[in-house]
Length: 444
Image 1 (tube, helix red, strand yellow):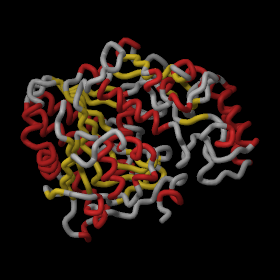
Image 2 (image 1 turned 180 degrees about the horizontal axis):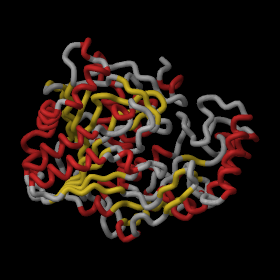
Image 3 (image 1 turned 45 degrees about the vertical axis):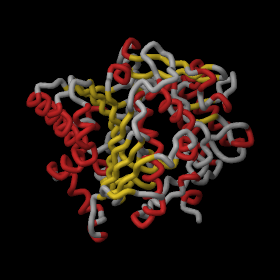
Image 4 (image 1 turned 90 degrees about the vertical axis):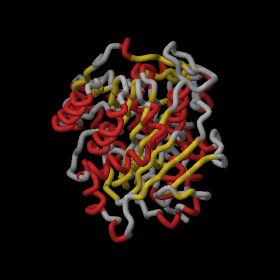
């Protein structure tokens, strides 16, 4: 487990004129090029290590497409996942599981296409190795149809870990239920996340795997600034009743949903709390609508959002840090070890990135980089730099870097050693941040 920390980056363009969406987007259709890049990134030693192992691939499958460009920038591209399988399966792993926990309103059958499933089945049959595709969610709810579906997977398929005072959330917790997550009943969340108690509902697929390969899509993010290797781990948690995203109220009221305080916004929050307790009834739609109208009456700016989609969100990054700790140190008996229990790798899809209102409604931008690493913080530090953002302004990355020695690492770009972040800056591209972060991240 004392493996040297590394990050290998490959540039997907040679001529700056090829750094455009049309040229980079065509790479997804070039299977030979994709498999060559992935083989190059993974390297001979890693590929040898997967022989006889159980592999978990964790893409970013956050939501089904709502517009045509989503196929490029919303999720980890299907062809990136398939190409990774083509590289890994010949090494004869015991099995491969591909899974994620999208948002509860994601329509799985639209996000995971029949064509993708068919290609996976063909590769599995050809290699003679079982490859499973798994939806890790325990609960789904489509607000438009107002139909909640609980217990999609039995609780036996999960491990409940209570990390208690070891949680990054502990300093901002109280015993009164101050945490919130969109479209969930906060009273259920309060049972799992409160002062001294910090529980997560983790898929057993994590603990069954010998090697975990996270496969994030590089995007901007409303609540954490950017989403890459660190944030992608959240999809190992199968139930958002365990997953705080913000604290109720404005910053003057001890919350982090919006800056300052505002009576209309606070009443709006009360109505959305009532609505989430009434999901599946006729009251839900009425209460949800009242909450929306009250919020609009407060004349919100980009930093004012019911989901705490702004740079002052001081909750989501802490939850992400907890889950990264669990991914490495968590045990199947529900405890945390003092020693790493598994090596976590990330194989990042940044050929086309997502900018603007990410992670759910991004616009494509020609990022042009893919990467492979065994240190998520190191990866996101470099990806953020290449996006043209200041890493110190993103609490998730700033905090994660305190826990890793970035002076004793190997970073390469096209096989050339990178000694400082300044070496990457000539390749950075202007990236439009999420609305609640734009003025903050793009300020000089």
